[in-house]
Length: 132
Image 1 (cartoon, rainbow, N blue to C red):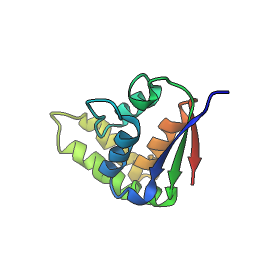
Image 2: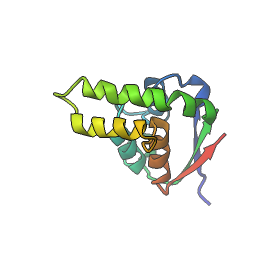
Image 3: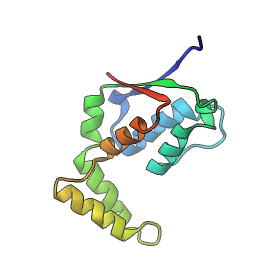
Image 4: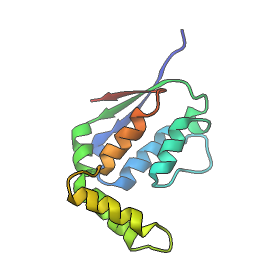
């Protein structure tokens, strides 16, 4: 039987979106000479496998400690700031997309950054997600 590897995101160390990606890079980009940027698309690509420590694309455990703190830190306020930042850079980001996401948040129907991360994790059958 093949051993299932485990990776642990330490929620106590997450105080921003940047902190989250710093941990992701420390866990999954060992042995690579590049790091993933602060991008939900990049996170999704990483979990598809083929590079970093997930090269083999084998099933793994993803343990996330103090998930309650992370949910708060990556919650509504952070998500609003995330989309407002995109609005301030129309040469890089789709303003209409960011506006629609902000409107959904204002109406109580939008997803927080944390909820989007969870949706990405749950969309990958190779990940056994273990909130702690």
